[in-house]
Image (cartoon, rainbow, N blue to C red; front, side, top):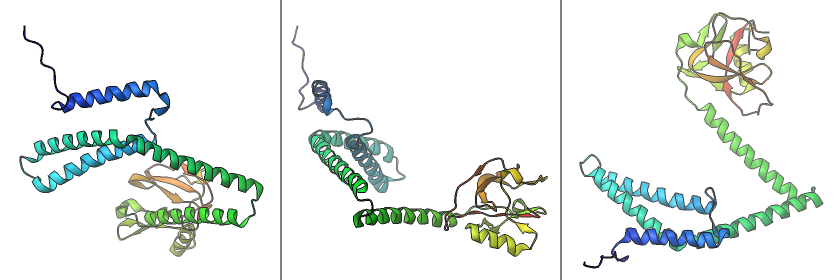
Amino acid sequence: MPPAIRANPTTDPGRADRLAHVRDLIEEHRHPERRVGIFSATNLTRLALRFGGMALAAGVVHALLGGTVLELPVTAGAVGAVDLAIGRLWRRIRDAVRRGWSTIGLVLALLLMAAFALGQVAPDSGLMKALGGWGSGLLERQRAKLDARARAERTPVAADAATDPAWVLLTEGGFVRRGTLQEAREWCAALGPEWQLPAGLGALPELSRWPDLGRLMYVWTAGGSGLQVGDGQKPAVGVSGSPRASEVRAVLCLRGAP
């Protein structure tokens, strides 16, 4: 009986990859401290490289062969080849990436510990005030960006769905108009002395009809909180809190509101 033919790892890359994976598992079993968590920075880096490379390969094939019968098979081959290549690359750079993230994590931890200690020892120091001002300034800038994005949001609404003898949802060019609390008060007052922002949940009037917009959104109340409208029903959900000066919401004005 002729001897069995064994696959040569040099000519069987799939078998070589499987053997390398087995060796990795044995190494992790011997050294548990080297295991990489699912949501660790190291593993997320690997996933980003893998899926980013596959997406790039698919994009290149689509740009070259998009709309032809060859696109699908060539894409499958290209994605598989890139996945295999990144797997081999990762085995070479994995330890370096892990050490790099470990160093970054250690430095950040030391900086946080130093900042906490300084805050306890000298909370009024110039450095702590500068750090606090920088952090609050960054937060305010991010909030301002979100508010500007919300103001620019284009939500179409039909004219008959935005008006009623007892209320009006302010629109502009066929889209919902959003503004700050101060703007909302001024816009309702401009409609006439009997028009005001709605009160809170516990003081809403009984109306035969509420805005039916096909989607839910929050509108301002007189006290600066928010009411959820849009389903044609009396609002039953609200939000509270102190509004920011730049915060925007849709504006619903009620006739004869308290």
